[in-house]
Amino acid sequence: MKNYLIFLTITAFLFACKAKKESIVSTEQTTTEMESTQGETTFNPEIVINTDGTIPDSAPFSLLKAGMKGDLLQLTVQYSGGCEPHMFTLYTNGMYMKSLPAQLSMQLHHESNGDNCRAMITETIAINISSVRYGDKGPLILRLKDFKESITYAY
Image 1 (cartoon, one colour):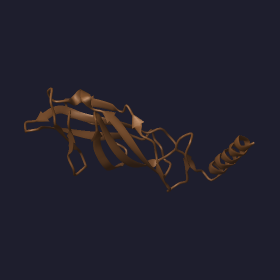
Image 2 (cartoon, one colour):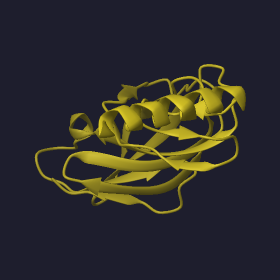
Image 3 (cartoon, helix red, strand yellow):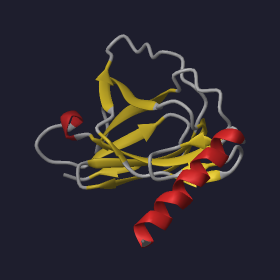
Image 4 (cartoon, helix red, strand yellow):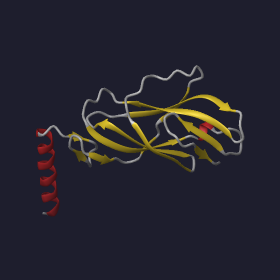
C-alpha cells in the first residue's frame, strides 16, 4: 500500500510538472524553472588533446569548484537547462609548460544540445586525467581557463 501511494504521488507530481513546463533533470529529480538543483556526479567526460589549440564554441556555464581525488579531476559546474542532456569535454593542447613542477593548460567545453530550459543545474563532473601525466612522478599543475586557482595533480 505504501509503494502504491508513493507511485501515485510521484505520478501526480510529474503530471503537474509537465503542465507547469517544469524541467526533468533526471529520473529521480525534477526542478522548476529558475530553481537550483544539485545533480549527481557525472563520470567519463572526454579529454581531447588538440595540438592546434582550437576549441569549439562553448555554451555558457560557471565553474564553481575544482579539485583532485586520486586521478579524478572533480569540477562543480552550473548551467541553465534541464530539458536536454548536457555534455562536457576537457580540452588541452598537450603542451606542458617548462617549470618545476610541470604545468598544463586546460579548458572545459560545454555542449548544451540546444537546451532552452532555464532551470539552474549544478553538477559535479569527474574526469580521469591519468592520460595527461607528465613523466612517472608528479605533481602536475593544472591551469583551467576562467578558474583563478591552479590545481595540483599528485601521482
